[in-house]
Length: 464
Picture 1 (cartoon, rainbow, N blue to C red):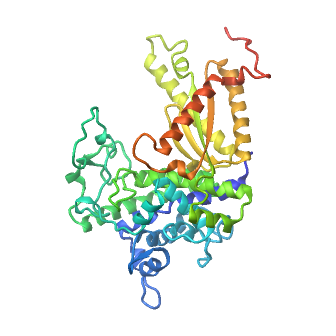
Picture 2: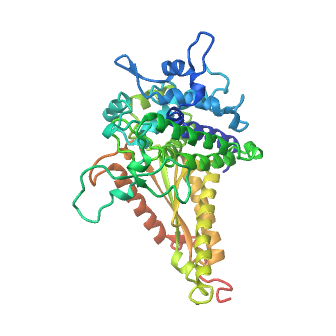
Picture 3: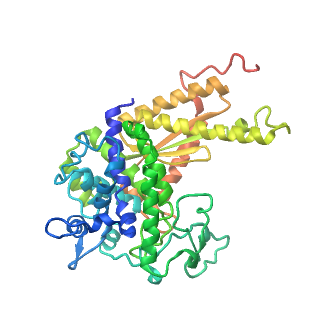
């Protein structure tokens, strides 16, 4: 059942997690707000480095965490009306000293202390698939990348260039990169590395600065009237964030291959953070106990998540139904029905999100008649999913006579299921295989035709 207060609180957690690495964008752009000085002559950059950055062997690392706090302050005027006294589950915006302020929760992901800080930090680490030992090494590493490229000049590698149709792997790094430009029909195509990777960091910073200004300009175009609806505004912001961070490498340190975008990493982190917070919120767990467990990773085997997959079944029958086989306007019919499949899939996903009071960022995939949503593994979630499936069944029986349908499959998951391991025994690979098996089983049980209260197999008006 939709709960507005719960939805708004979930949106705030989602936004804080979505922007936890905002500082990577802002620091590479060298935003001017970082050089502002206080009455004693200290720059905001230096002050925030002491607050938010871990220190190893006498030097600070992951300077982007300090820039996250600076950039959030700079973006405050673009945020919706929730920036005020009601910031649940965070402390009010202006209480900068509060451990669980919005700014601190987003910026402390490399040295978390409070419950909400650990929620976002854990989601960040799970989204990255880090083992404990690997994360500790990453957390103390620099931003230097292979071949003397730093985080200003390195550009994102394309996955497509790494695909091979034979077993023989080619040596050396891929030759192409994505240009650092807003999402567009031309920017989605990679180019040669020498054509888009700057030779010096000053040029790289200038490119990031241009992109940052375009990002700010797009935020101003979000209708002010939509700020009153936090979920709607977050949907707008998610589109803007994707447009300007789709080609920013999420990680460059620790010899990480820069083939994951800042958008993809932050979107996954947001979905996981909301599910984590909601899991403990709905169970009324003690924040201090949860914080300690997250710190020690003693709860990483606890199934706190539910992965929900939706699938439009009977697509071929739907697209090539009566009229689709004629030559007259066949292309229009096929395009129209394909678009209708996309619309129905989107509507089904929105229905699930609404019933679970989850923000739009909790949907991480929607393509080819399928979607994937990350939700908390609670009794309320499972009851809502069963109710949504029943409603979807009734709609498709009424409008397609059961020739098409929409199935939901869900599977519980723990933090350890997302760990990265080489080879075929990766926990995440196994988890997704099990989820697809659940989906196939759901297809074979469509409409509950074998249940005690199955719908009638005879339809009125079918031949009409």
